[in-house]
Length: 239
Image 1 (cartoon, helix red, strand yellow):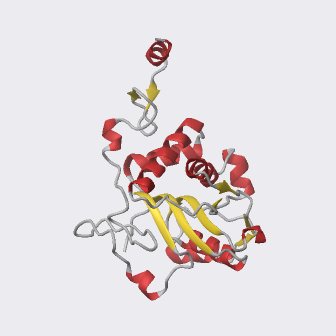
Image 2 (image 1 turned 135 degrees about the horizontal axis):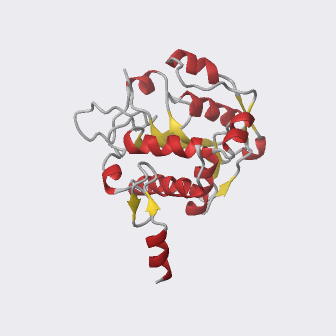
């Protein structure tokens, strides 16, 4: 009864369009815009290709065939766009814990759907770090919140301080693919506490894949046995 009264007085709002809904999450219309990435992305790097002729769970893109990434495998929960894009932008610019919780559940649901979230129990979850300036401005690290949620759900350790940025990175907004690659090259350092460990590297949005590749390179230099990557959303390929 109390819950009913509270919902009537302060209904939950869709995290994307702010329409009233019965419980925290996305409204039916916004949920309909979600595109699960598993069948429309490269099975190695998670680059999303919306023009694939049909579901292609074993598809491997030309870039991975020519120059394989440093990590073992990357998985994205959804293609970046529509209501999910709007929700992520709102979450990062106007942080609300309940939005992060919903996005974490959405991410987990897709990883679980393919049984990919079943990691060895000694796996360490590591978020891609954000700059100190951006962390202060936002009040949190989006990748860190997702990483902690994944670690709790999968009963794994989360080490948010393993990776650090060598210097402040300017915003990637408006940069070309080549400029993005240069922006993140050799910018990460990793603690050797993860030596011999299996790593699940977590980020919120994969744009070109360069960030998680360079972060994985740093983890492997520090002695990690293997690095896998999980991201909430991957930006569709524009080529």
